[in-house]
Every structure is written in structure tokens, then in C-alpha cells.
Length: 116
Length: 111
Image 1 (tube, rainbow over the protein chains, first blue to last red):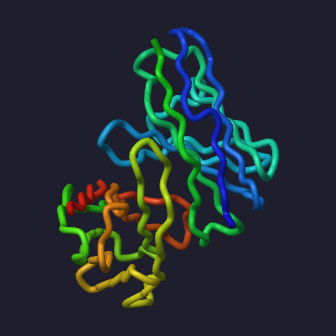
Image 2: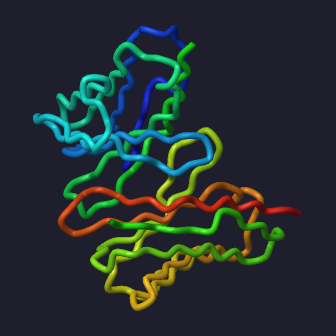
């Protein structure tokens, strides 16, 4: 149980394009999902908390106009990297919570984004 | 602010036990977690412990929590080559749903 699917797993695109990453909870409903960014050989950095039906809460230093988050249903959250540039290249990972916040976060397999 | 520290690297021989350590600074932590990350993959939840517990065992995994010293450890018995990965500890609080991750420990298991 508690499977989180993230798609795509790897994307390469040209600078200036927008890229959408999907995060789905497959066997549970997730009122809260999280988006993280991970640089090589580093820990995870929380970008934003995504709540179903409301605006995402962004961490300090994360541009909300750059990283658009939509959580339109209890099983799907999307992260759109708008007008991506090489410095946005990174490993993006989502997680979802089954139920209330005291349940563990379950993670997707991540999306490797490479901007040329 | 909160800070979670781990040693960067641990190397063990196959069949031996591995002990990965984690220290944290915030005494109001409610839950403490251990996650495993294999190369190019997301994080896999291994186990977690509530802050009013001292120990939790799950098959080859044993978690020890010393609240006084704010020290958490993960012991892997009979370590196998498939256990080679990065292990992250993380803490969360009752009044927030955020996780604070440690720096990660790379475990290398050699034959």
C-alpha cells in the first residue's frame, strides 16, 4: 500500500520551455503532497507543501511564479517549472501523506530534469 | 532552527551489522523516520518511531532513540549488498507536516 507514482522519470528539454511533473497517489487519497528538490550528493530541500483545493505553501526562497503547483484532486498534484533554464536542472521528488499529518510521507521515484 | 546531522559515509562487510547514527536539535520532535534512497530513485520509508518510544524492531532493522541526547540510530543486522544506498533520518513535529531531513549517510557493503 501507499504507492506514489511520479511522471515523467526523466525529461530533457531546451531552455525556455515549461515542464510539468505529475505526482499521483495510487491507492490512497492525499490531502497533502510535498515537492522537494535534491542536488547531487545532497539532502532533500522542501520546495512547497501542496494542499488539495487550496494554494500551495512555498518555502522561503522558492519562486512561486517559477514553480507552479496545482493540487486539483485528492490523488494528483502537479509541479510546472515555467520557462526552465539550466540552473533549474535537478532531481525533483514528490511525497504524499495518507490521512493526517502524523502519517509518514511516501515518496515517488523522482524526476530528473535536465535543461539544455 | 532545527538541524539534523548524520555521518556521511559508512562501509561494512557483508553479513556484519551496520549502525547509522543521527542527531537532532529540536526536542519537540514528534516522529523520527528512516528512509532509504537508491541511486536515481526516490525515498523508501524503512521505519519510524514515535518520540515516546525508546526502541522499535522490524525484522533486520532496529531503531534506538535516546531522547535525552537527541540521538537516533538505525541498526541493520546481517547487512547485504542490496542494503547499499543512502540512508536519511528525518524528524517531524506534531503541529507541522514538514519533514526535516538529515544530510544522509552513504552505506557501502562489500563482500
